[in-house]
Amino acid sequence: MRDVVIVGAGRIGATLADMLTLSGDYAVTVVDHSADQLAMLDVSTSIATAKVDVTAPGELEKVLAGKFAVLSAAPYHLTTRIAEAAASAKVHYLDLTEDVKSTRMVKAIAGKADTAFIPQCGLAPGFIAIAANSVARTFDRLEEVKMRVGALPQFPDNVLNYALTWSPEGVINEYCEPCEAIVDGALTEIAPLEDCEQFTLDGIAYEAFNTSGGLGATCHKLLGKVKNLNYKSIRYPGHAAIMKLLLNDLQLCKRRDLALAVLKHAILPTEQDVVVVLVEVSGEKNGKTVTEQFSRQIYAGYVGHARRSAIQITTAAGISTVLDMLANEQLPQKGFIEQEDIDLDAFLANRFGQTYGRSESLNKVA
Image 1 (cartoon, helix red, strand yellow):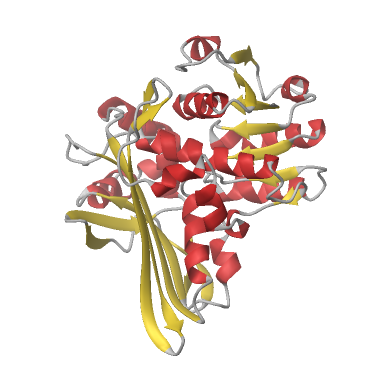
Image 2 (cartoon, one colour):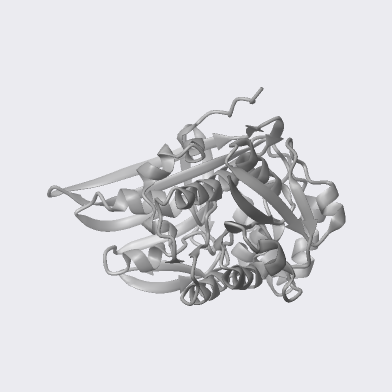
């Protein structure tokens, strides 16, 4: 039995706690700064909780003492603090952040740590990088790598064709921050919400546009090996134009607090969602020019007796798989580990990673 701590008692933290506890191999403690949030923790099993202000020096370290790992499901601005506590307590560290600056700081902390530090273990960044790099490795010469991910309502009911399927703070962040890409062989930054493209997958029309953070370290891994590489978020048609009006034309990107308030006020969350993953790689194999695709569609379902959204399930499954691989010594036990170094077949073979092998709704566990 491995003792782990989850920081963050939100929906992702609750799903993760249930997923790990139900496996029978992990004893979970969920910590949060809010007693009310902990009281509302929506889990189907008995899980230990603790009210902890992670920003207070030494408080999180006390909880981490003697544990196997800490998993951050907290807002991205707490990433560095939690990583510092993990290093001090000498426990393994995993997170779900999409924030590029925070990940760079985690890498610096990992350089002096005695345990493994594995950031960006969710969907995007996370699984999308594992999938893209695994497909890319089968090519003799790479021309283009396209990475596309969306968490979308199955039944959109507003002009944005969107619902708050995950952290609204994270949505605003990825719509406002510069985006890494490789263009004509050079590493560069491109603007968010731009380069909107239209495509159809399984008869459904989508759009995709630049957003920040979903690439992980893929740009740096494939720099010098691919001509063009980019990451875009998938939405239903029309979404990008409205968000550009709000964030760019009305300059709410400079007032993210106000943009966040608008989203929370106007858009309701949903548990009837679908996660769409699409990787497209083109290049040369055995002297022939080819294009290959990897796609997944994962729907909302159940973890234990609790109904969870698709984004909750895929995100929790991503970090649970990496934790399980770490516990089984399938990954290095020390230092900074990137998602791009994780083998796709090993990931999908894992009991938690099998979630990504499904393209239909999960069955309820009796």
